Length: 177
Image 1 (spheres, rainbow, N blue to C red):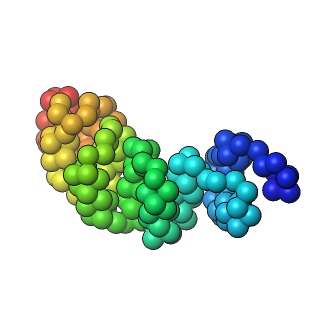
Image 2 (image 1 turned 90 degrees about the vertical axis):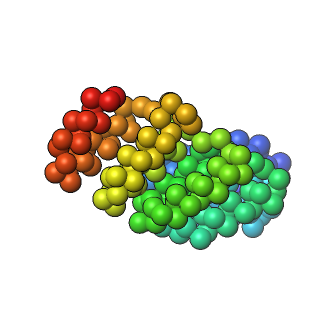
C-alpha cells in the first residue's frame, strides 16, 4: 500500500490499523500511522485518528492522545462519542479519574452527546479509586435523565460497595434497580 502510486482509500488503511490494534500491537499501529502521515499520500479521517487516540491511551501517552484530538478539531472533524469515551477511559486507566470527570464536564457543556458506555467508564473509574459514593452520586444524577442506566453500572457499584464492606448499601442499590 505504501509504495503504490495510487494509494488505496483510507478505509483500507483503517482496516489494517484496526486489525493490528485488536492484536494489542499499539506501537506498531502508531508506527504505521506515522509512516502514512510522513508519506502524505493518504489523508487520515476521523476513524484513523480515533484509532490513533486509542493506541496512545493504551500506551499511557495521554498528552499525545489529546494532541490527536486537537488535530481532529483542526481538520474540521467532529469527535464522536466513541472518541471522547476513549479519552476518558484512557485517563481512568492511568489514574486520572478526576481529569476524566473534568473532561466529561467540558465536552458535555459543549453539547457533545455521551452515552451509557461513557458513564459506565466513569463509574468504573471512580469505583477503581475507591470513590464508590461519588460513582453512586453520578449514577443517581444520570438515572432516567441523561442516559438509560444499565445492569453493568449497577453491578460495578454493588461490587465496589461490597469490597468496601458496605453490604447494607449494596443491598439498597440492588433493591432500587
